Length: 237
Image 1 (tube, helix red, strand yellow):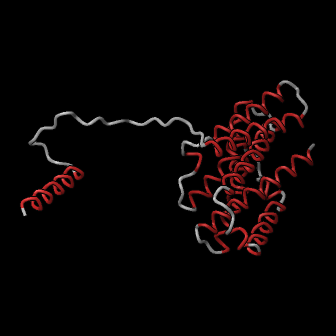
Image 2 (cartoon, one colour):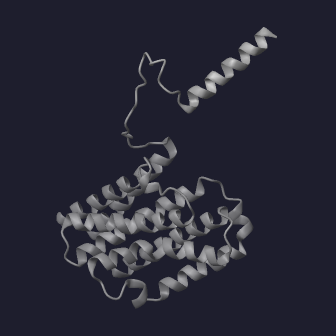
Image 3 (cartoon, helix red, strand yellow):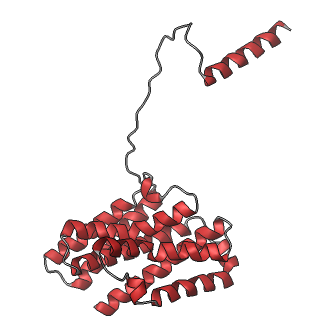
């Protein structure tokens, strides 16, 4: 199963690197910008995970194949730039959802192998899945999806919890991987398709019913008063 985990990790790197390339194209970046976004998306989450867990050196230093895979993904994307440019707007979230599911399983699995508790393993799985995308969005001057009301980090947490629970019950590793992938990917794709979102909590300011006439007018009130004055002048004419 170590070979299966390794190839799942590689698949996640390719998918996330491709999502970085797509966002770089839409942000009108040069080839170096594409490479940077692809790299931070593909290995950023795993790098932070290894640093937090105290793994030295981090995984891509031990195995530079990850870097070559990212470089190959960017190179192929440059050749097929026109095809990538024609992809629909919905392709990036879907590709990101697959990367999220794959990296959540990888991060949770690696944390458990290092002897962490179940709670820490779930957090490491979520970090592996969302951190790279957060760095990518910040570099592209976008609000990261994990900070919006979309079901994103929640899907990663759910998938991590399923994996940890099944491992605690001594379920077969293949079943635990498949179940975790299905839960994370299913929740994320359902959120994309049906526009599901978490509730947003914000302070609501209720304007007073009767405003003091001597109180200074706000900018919107000044604009409304200006419109009223113009209408009165037109009526007099």
